[in-house]
Length: 127
Image (cartoon, rainbow, N blue to C red; front, side, top):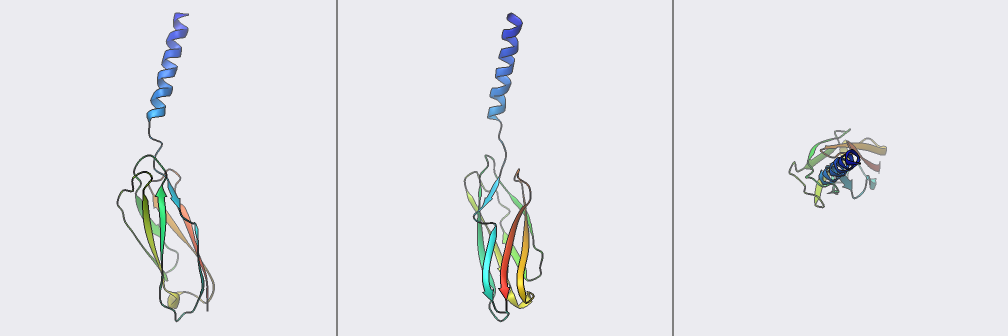
């Protein structure tokens, strides 16, 4: 009986210790598809501010954002975003550099989130 109580006490203390450990940072975007609508190649650059929230329990850092087209540039802070706070990625699309027709591009967002790389789709019709 004494051995049973000792094992039970050890088991309970390990469960409590695990409950106190942080689960990590996580990232949730306002949207994962940005629809720019119909754009002319003569139009000015389109600027989109895409917000995200750290839904984890430790600070989040966006470390890199990759684009798949020279017509798209991004800006983002590399500062820590605390749990429940928001950050912003600014996306600029230059329709003069985009190919005509249906436009689909994917941004790859790398961060310290436990969910790994996130993908954001940009879509438009370029005339």
